Length: 514
Ligand code: XMP
Image 1 (cartoon, protein in one colour):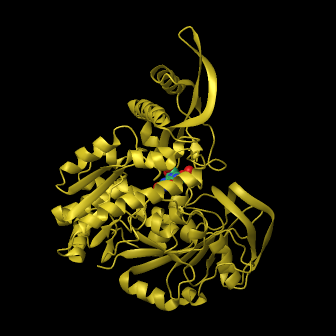
Image 2: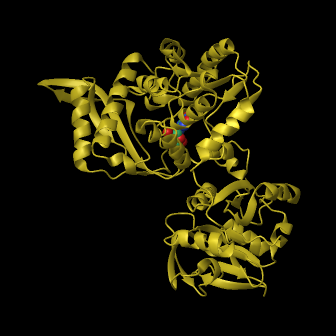
């Protein structure tokens, strides 16, 4: 069955993924594709998917920039409903020979929009709506084929529709939660204008994925680098169900893991009856990292050592297929699908072992978003601890210890991190948090412990709320949690004299300290 699909043309906007996810959350499949896709390629895609609509994403450019991203204008004549957002809205207006110019006043953040005609994607909305804007250019005039649907103080044409074709433009971002009725706007487009049926769900995903892996791999041997994160765990579980003992999972304990992580992996995967190799490489990593403070160097060293250890193990296995837990945003961010790659570079430990040739790579999660992967994880029988595991950077605790790494500092960081985790989870606060962890800073502070003066480390802890980690806000948590965390850390870890809470949003900060 060809699924009903909404294609998202990626013009490089930071919210492109949110559009894709939002469509899927509505039970309709979506794919993000490069905006300059050729008509031939688009036709091929239409034989694979039942393309019912196209959404043009936003983007950082002005339509007048020399290298501004473009699309094949003939796409507008295919009879497929189209919705342009922000840059997409301006580009449609520009291509239609409308007047697009820098706004007298740029609009960033909340704006009040006046809906002049609540039809099409704006059906069911009130006269005044609160929306999220982020633009420099504005559409000032459109030819008669178009009708204005909304305006703001600074955008005379903040929304439009074509009088005959199903082509719409919105200057704002309905995909961002700050646009109060954004979901309704997208639902209007997906269901009313494009006529999509809800036929995308995670039910049956595992069954199909296992069938596909069996077909691809036949009697071959598979190898997976299991990190303990949710993606590689789910990929491992699915392949294990497809090929059983013909799968070898290599788990490298770099020594930069969190409390209890290695034990948890052993316990979880013993029931999948695979060949699980747990490699204790702590000493090797510590030696390679000795005296290194520079965060980028730390990352590179860990990546390099990881590949070496993995290759050594892989050589012995003689596997035909390499299994990877690549998920959809990884593919988009690494540049295989669109322009977003130019905005965020993906930094992961691992990658492909260069010295070994595989027949093919198996990526059972390549089309899924993180929340979809978590659903499959539950389906595959993985324990809640793994299903809801917070994202953990590939280089592990190494990027949460500022300055050179020693065994003692790792021990302090691990204990502090465990306390933060325990206290957050004891109160059930983790459900609303993207990540929560401790950082061992490179600073010392005086304190008093018992009756004596103490001089010890400053531990910082961080808890953030986020949807995608592209932006994040520090979490406003109850004081009693902060007090318990600080009391426990200073009591239970003698080398720590001070605990601070990180109140930086992203931007300007990052989620991780290094
Ligand atoms: P930043 O610190 O870039 O983090 O705001 C955004 C998200 O990415 C995770 N992160 C990493 N993940 N390898 C990874 O696999 C890395 O090197 C890495 N650095 C950061 C971070 O935990 C957060 O969820």
